[in-house]
Length: 431
Ligand SMILES: *Cc1c(COP(=O)(O)O)cnc(C)c1O
Image 1 (cartoon, rainbow, N blue to C red):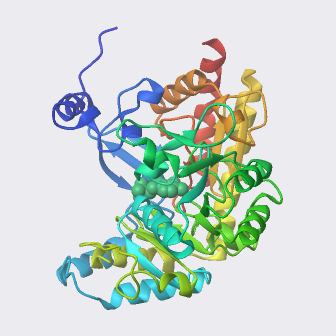
Image 2: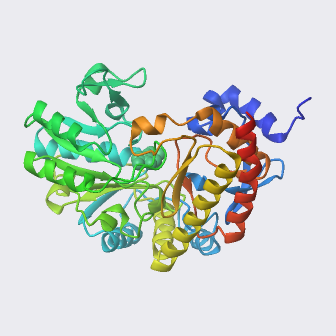
Image 3: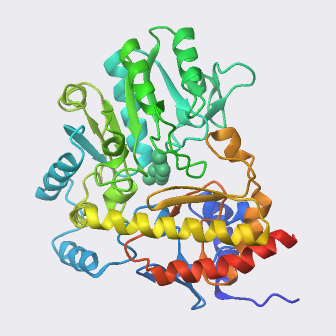
């Protein structure tokens, strides 16, 4: 069958000549689902429209920031007004004070904070601060957790015993990777082992309290509490990377849901409401060590940008208990519908979810850790994904990513999605 040329295909060809892989962030290229990405021209509510005028129900939602949907009218009005007052000043503004106060009201563990431009910067800066504050070099991260692309975080467990990390990307030096120790998510014993092997050397444990970057994997009972205790015993800091879970698991993030207080927290995604914002913050005595108050250097030309702060303020001002109840209902409806569709087609599927986050793993075993997550079939996911996209549903283009729901998704959207999932699951069964 001759493929018709579409605007998206032409754009992708042009894009590949000027952008590596045709994109500005790898997952967008659809390599994990053997496809070519539609180029998005506009979006509203729960829907995106591509350059060829095709409309999709969107479950990527910019990878999490858009908890109120695409381009809500209140946000576009607020941004329109803000842009007329100037786009960047490189000087303090009332907006950043207001946003910091609002974040602290929602997440009291962030006694003080610093705004940056991305989750990557937030994690990188929080780790620098943790190392400075503890005067220790090593950090512990978990296999399958993602904290942005700073050198020391692009590291996986070395073979054999969980000891020194090895780089997952060329260009990351062995020295950089050597200070990153890698443990198993939901495996407290692996963390305790690292602490025994590296006594008084570990500055911090950084964790996604609800893992979202190997697909959704919620923490097992006692895991996060155990991390808190291990860190306290060893004089290490506990850093929650709540770039996804912050303002998503609840207004107060996963730390509110699980009743735990990290020393430092990384934020991103929802905090910018679709504009580039990240933040790190926590205990006042730690944050007092950040320049200019303290010696730990960290800066940003566009940090606290007035448009970005405006989007963050509007987004956080619209969070409510009712919103989280509605999102959780939609999430449960979608999870149940996908599971049913798979069951009827005879396709083994495990749907992991947490409120408005979910991941259908094409696997016959429960997914509670990284090893089980990567056991899922990327081939089956690819078949499913392409069948969904053809039917006007846009799931994340990788098995190992979260689906994001927003306030703009309706029961009708969910039901249309489930209706599309039925033939898509049959296509998986046939493949
Ligand atoms: C997305 C993400 C990051 C990185 O944020 P960017 O804004 O893409 O740099 C860090 N941590 C987690 C948990 C994330 O999901």
